[in-house]
Image 1 (cartoon, rainbow, N blue to C red):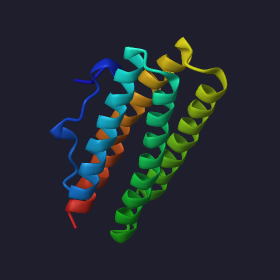
Image 2: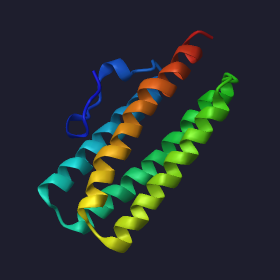
Image 3: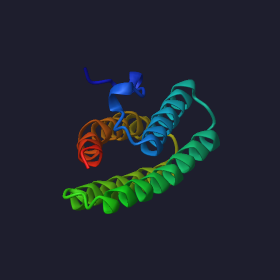
Image 4: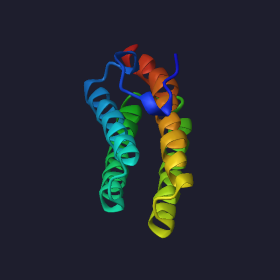
Length: 138
């Protein structure tokens, strides 16, 4: 069953059995959950901006690590993964810039909760799971 943005949480079914990547995925989900809770609690925009910046930095590091593992095993769908990572990074940066220029509007809250949350879940549950199966079969 697909999580809604309000209940998006790390689940063991998302494990790809690469401990470093699984730990990073779990941290990404936890950071997203923290962000969602901060948005709902109406915390100061500076707190939300700090959490967004932390999430952006962590995602960048995670993508670099994940791509390193893909290179090691010559993952045949690596180009698709890299394109997805680039899309997410670009879109996340757009959202962050919109937040910085427009503030905490209802539209930006909805975008963060829905678009980013669903992308995170779908990417891990689909593309990363496929990579995990490939990696572990080698």
